[in-house]
Amino acid sequence: MGSEAQELRFLLIPLMSQSHLLPFTGMAKHLAAHGVSVTVVMTPLNALRYKSVLDHARTLGLAIHFLTLPFPCKEAGLPEGCENIDSLPSSDLMTAFFDASNMLQGPLEKRLEAMEDKPSCIVTDICFPWTTDVALKFGLPRIVFHTISCFTLLCSHSISRSDVMGRVKGDDEPFVVPGLPDKIEFTKAQLPQMMKDGLDDLEDLLDTFKAAELTADGVLVNSFEKLEKNYVKCYQKVVKKLWCIGPLSLSPGVDSAKLDRGNKPSIDPNRCLDWLDSRDPKSVLYVCFGSLCHVSASQLVELALGLEASRCCFMWVIRKGDHSQELEKWLSEYGFEERTPGRGLIIRGWAPQVMILSHPSVGGFMTHCGWNSTLEAVTAGVPMITWPMFAEQFYNEKQIVQVLRIGVSLGVRRPAEWGEEEKGGVMVSREAVQHAIGRLMDEGEEGAERRLRVKELGEAARRAVEEGGSSYLNMSLMIHYVRKMQNRKRSMTRLMRHY
Ligand code: UDP
Image (cartoon, rainbow, N blue to C red; front, side, top):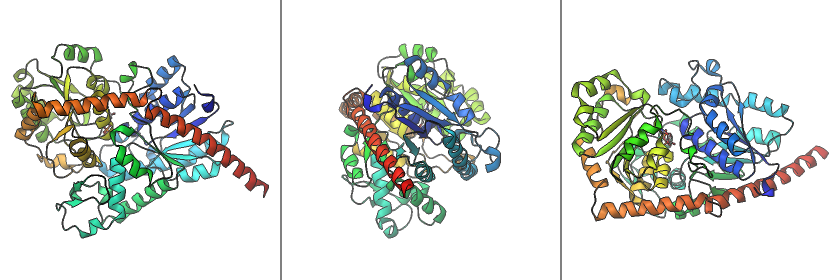
């Protein structure tokens, strides 16, 4: 632990969603391992879910605490207990969820006022521009943390700063993103909702986020330099300071942290490991679409038929929200599990994903391309089949398939809107699933080269977070910078008071 870090107290403010809480709590462990005292803002139900993080911290002697604020569900018009995006019954409640999140500002300020030992710095989610005011009020440096890649950040920045979108006719006309190190094409349909014009409210919101990022004292990204060197360099020119500190799913010195991931797995991890142990190396395809995607029952049936036809071993996670009676009825009437004896394991609910991906029997990952899942696959050296669904997932797909060349695309052309599942649409056919699995798990030259590339990236990922690695050093540099900023802000505040 560096003396540099002594007495520094970081306050982390995450969005209450699994894909934000996981990397934020991951960062808390890394910061604490550098000797910083860390407090993470939580709400009561999320604090319960993430209690294992505190338990681990205690056993390792890491200074991690939670500051728990009641989540104003009622005031924002949310059902009681909706403290995490994954518990929203409908996407229509997204705005209410953000309203509730913004209402945390007042209670947080009150708690800060009452604190004897104020934080030295705020590390905030990009979604909370109000933290600018909190930082100003308390004279604190403010660092923004991104849970997406530099590639995505740069694509998004370049598109919004150019007039390219204005020149595109229709949703499906491809255009080249200007000013990138590689030639990357998108269609308007594939861009996150916020990037599409004509939605003034969302555009305004994006501008607010951007302004809060550009005025921040620095920016942290859950990525590592070797993964996207050219994009890191380019994005460094956009913001004041940039540090890549990932992959944050790799915990400092604790293997058990693979299970310490928010939700309790819905399957006994030992059963999972026994099943994987009984398979050949690199023979299993892991299928999981993250913590938020809703997939229609008819699309899941089509996927099941593709898995069956592929003759490949698979471990398939069916999200709690997608456990429809319709799907279960089909699975049992069709006799899906009997038709794939011994080669398929279905997990209904939450899977211990990081543990599964790091098992030597896993040879491929069919993913919705969430950034955490992508990075976890890279870290484990597992190539991917890409099935982007919404948000920035189409950017991630380009990075996986075209830039890094560690994945096979299913060729999805447009996002599935939330609520689409009710319409029962099928976007990916069983043939496409079977074909992609055949290509990914292939023993031939193309598959071998892909596996080699991702294996090397996985090794680079592990080196990055080890002592002396790029992400480790970046974390130290950021801590050093915060100390300097804190001292400067303190003297400025003293000076202002004097006058
Ligand atoms: N995850 C998990 N078990 C599951 C589903 C998801 O551990 O059954 C974790 C996964 O490891 C990742 C996160 O949840 O860290 C999902 O984040 P991602 O950015 O991939 O996707 P999102 O949930 O935002 O769509």
